[in-house]
Image (cartoon, rainbow, N blue to C red; front, side, top):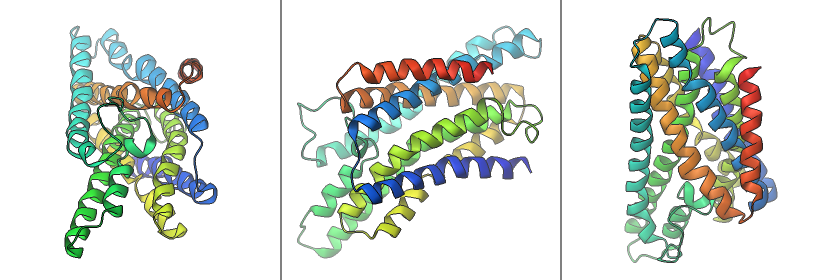
Length: 294
């Protein structure tokens, strides 16, 4: 029953949220960088608050209650570093492999993505789609690989988000009774909202490339499935014992901190070079703090 509840919650957050963004993108056929920038930075602020004021503090409370050893903070810090490093390295490998194949990413380009299309490597997919390679079969092969890379990039972005939801629920006593309260539910809502602009980024280039709107929206929604898998993974690991729960919370927190500081925040600032994205982050941080308290 608990696993079914996790699946339903994260399906709504990951698949429905991303699919809604795909639907909005299909209607508007464009996205506003300024609006998307504020949405991303605001969501990043709430995520940061929940991770720092709730997820990472949970093991400390367990230590104070006497159910965890006094060196628990060291375990948490180590797990956070590992979570951050793993997601960073996987993204670095993908970026290093694909960026050289996208013409506009040269020496003058920022060292990180400055558009949602780059973050999920939709630009890499479009580059291969527009190439005129002599052998048709070769063209299809390159396009398939580019599509696969895009799927992996989306998965690397969504899996940590799902793990945070799952690990949060693993730390929740009487999960079914508290399904719609606590940090797990808060993160599910926030991630669902921030998936809307991401869904727009996925569907717009697909439709512009000639794909039908219903098919583009469906594929966009399916790109949110890794959130469900990540949640199940985080919940399963966290449910083994208290040590594994601490490791799961730490790893998921580190992975989410990479998403916030390595992707969402720098990208939102590059999308709108203004002080407003950081102000939006600040407001999101305060809102997240209040959500954790109440």
